[in-house]
Image 1 (spheres, rainbow, N blue to C red):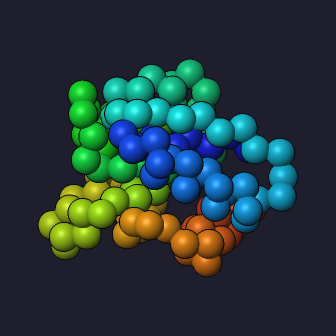
Image 2 (cartoon, one colour):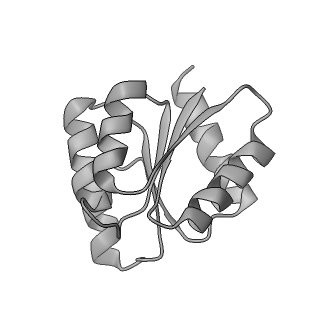
Length: 123
């Protein structure tokens, strides 16, 4: 399974990757991006099953990256992980097609729920 983790904070990416590795016991290929433009470029190149995306990033923010990814692939599964938990931001992300919106930091239980939901859709 291919997964894309995009956040301008290396520490935040490492935390998400650690939780993914703890939850998934299958062969996983993880790609990392530092901004929305990298997220979009990596998505087009690798077509990951899941994208974890921060909102506040340089070059291109998460909203714009989400919009471009969904335009490129309407079936893309993009999960927003952000410290920005204002209702306006959540609503905007979901309206743009986010699969889910999670408050940072993500925990093991929440990650398991999201991955289960995504796996259910694929059946």
